[in-house]
Length: 352
Image (tube, rainbow, N blue to C red; front, side, top):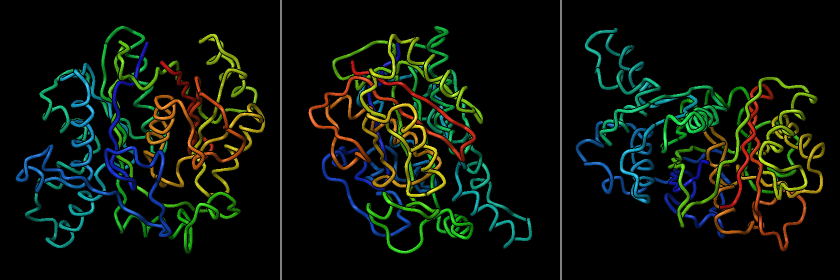
């Protein structure tokens, strides 16, 4: 058994808070950066000065997650990041150009590698056990979570710190904007909900989960199973979904809600809508990217949203995309994510 014991996030909603569950911050801009907490509560100011934004966010969410549990040193630290430390990579490449490839600052290079995030967390925690980083763009976090789940099933670990971290610099936002990755003009929930055009609300994600094999009174929910597929056809998807449910003694009727990464991008969203109409047409379809934005680690915020619903035993109306949720006390939620309709993941959560 694998339970989510604590979660911490830094995003475009209030950091470390669950205010978004009742009253989310609403944005009209198409590019929003994360709201930063007071990092001095977690990181010494001198050390923080040498870190980029993503490293500070990763450390803060990890340390906050650990602080909320009795687990000081997890058996594994597993991180998913789509593009790693973009800010420091940009600084290193800029310095290379400005200095004609001479006298380059080593800090930017060391902090530009993808696995430096997990390494920094391990150094701070003095945790030298299983440490791994996954970088598969939109399914990076899902891959990290799958690794942790497998390690639990093998009996190799009894606790794990699993995280998803991605940042979006102005330069990278502009680059993706040129290929139509972001919505044009003003943003609103109505525009994202009924969109027939490409593009999404841009955001950033830094979210950490503490997983443990033992249930406590503070546990959010249980992770029942995870499945990942590559370019599945309808038959393969149906078979995998049925296997995931049946292996946990459930069927499609037992799912109380499905939460997906609908973002306002017509090509992205059509995949989710087709899945919903095919397998769960009468179930509430939930979304979260209209309040958290799109990023390579956004699926971690989707899992956070689903876990918070199960913890609070209710579904707020503002994350309902379609179908009624009145009088629903959710017990089982399916989290579905895909990236460019190639990599797909299914995560089954159940209340404790």
